[in-house]
Image (cartoon, rainbow, N blue to C red; front, side, top):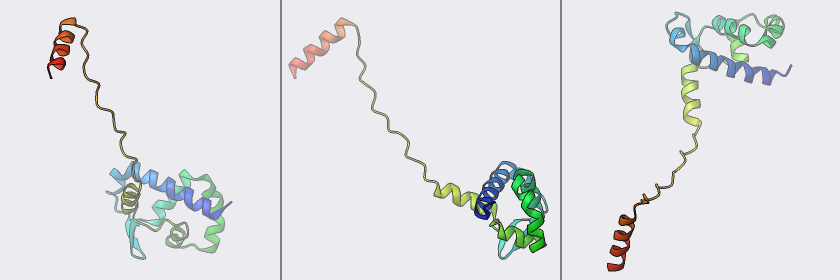
Length: 126
């Protein structure tokens, strides 16, 4: 298992889960600050990630042997960030391509002969 790939996958899955469930997560009393970053508690994030990323379940026994501090595990996984700020930064940095510019509408062309003859007469006069 590639640790960097696990970090990237865990990050994207956590952010997607947080974004989809933010409406109730922000109301929980699970917020903490670790190394200056306000985020949901490490235990909450680890619980969510074990449900979302099966490879993390395989790695956690080894990880816990190295460190049983949930904050350090979250930090090692690259998840010690405020998810609201991260989502805002991601939205701001994802420059959307400009909307396609449409050509102006074609002038209306009537099938009525009298309009065409009037237009022709006016264009000859100018």
